Image: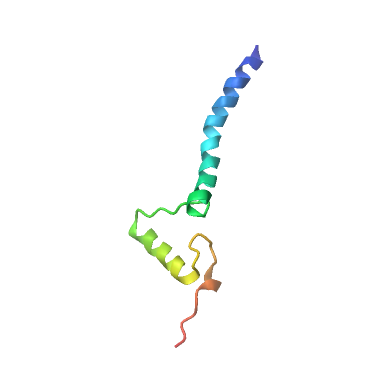
Length: 72
């Protein structure tokens, strides 16, 4: 009957959804933040370095309030 498909559908949905959530927690465990930054382009590396220098925590979005003003 129709309920015989439920175990296969459950396994298929687990195989589809578990890696997405496992990656989130694995990145927290390994890198200390839930998302990895793409460091393949020079622009992204520069922005990571800038955020590290300005705030000390490049994975937290602080906004313009955290950037110091130039005193001239």
